[in-house]
Image (tube, rainbow, N blue to C red; front, side):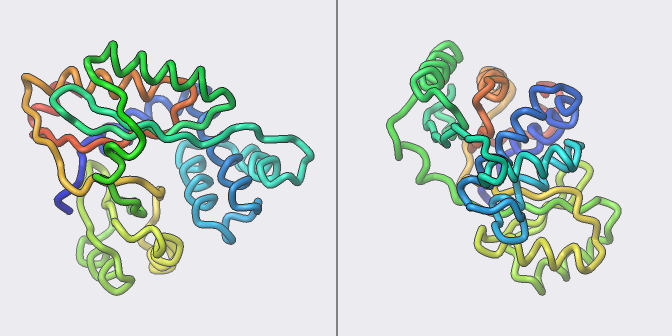
Length: 249
């Protein structure tokens, strides 16, 4: 896929380390709560967005009972109100790199100010709604253990109607249309290929190439955005050679 961004791989490696911190757990639980509220159900088989949120939480070892309680709380089954709202911010990092920041917040004014300040301090700029979102497509992303045979992964992806398959570090990544996410994920699992994670994401339609001289400031801004408490996901469209990335990340 031409629009693949290296940031997806960096985020995966970073999240594996950050999973040991309570901050990431709180973020994942919040995502489950809001997905259950928006979908009106605590059952992930009934809503693909909730299924993706639950799967992501399980990937980073959030306890099952904690996930289930978060889903029930979000769906209104525990008489505990979930106050968060989903807000998307759009802007540019240095070198004209497009950035989408997905947040879940109970205070839009506070979060907006934090996002704006972070962009400015990082040498970027916050844009107007719609300024960069058009550069991205909502897709499903299904991770399969790298031990799976390449032919088996490619055949399954083709048979199930996926868009693309790529090797990313220690796993295969299957890309599909968002509407097909649940069925393709189930099909991959049914074939015993070892689904190690899945999510609904935003992939760029094209990328901005970076080199060692300009990648550093971009990666720094993205890292700071990821560390903000209200930020759920950061999506971007940069690309950088692997040898440069190995030094910087």
